[in-house]
Length: 252
Image (tube, rainbow, N blue to C red; front, side):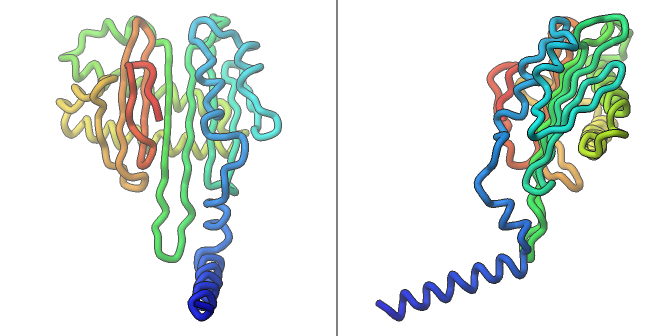
């Protein structure tokens, strides 16, 4: 029995040595218990912002956690971002306003969680992107060839708005700039798939969702829904569980 205990101690010591020596401290840090703010808290400001209701002062009061996040503003965009796991997990919340309207017209939440590369395991990324935005009537009233063409046009407009809003604050915040590139890359992957097979746009709905395979991020699903003039897009990649109860209450 003593020999078995000694062998077990030696094995544990060797295992720890391999983890530190071959994988590096980053891997050990990654598997430590999560520190605040906890993942379920990161999107609180997104969830508490109501388009066409929340004003800039409301968003500003809710969006920023001074202890953990960086606040960035432009004339029409308010954003906050943070990182954990020594940069392996980053997130941002963002709300955008039109110059002629006092209430929020677009809102976003993004989270990417990347395992560091180890000696024997390739890194994986979990990605979550939520967006909701008010669209003008011209987008819906355009005489499209069919419903699939309309869905693709709406998704392109969503990406254009994301790019425009991120450009306003990305230069001052590296986290948001990096996140913007990942969002752009992910949505371009979806759009390329739709360009090759437009009929797949029928899956761009709040119930079914369109599956896609990203070259670097892995397997993902995108949903898109509309209620009145508000369009909602959700993306989940890799191990974020992709289930939801209704068109505008997806769960991770």
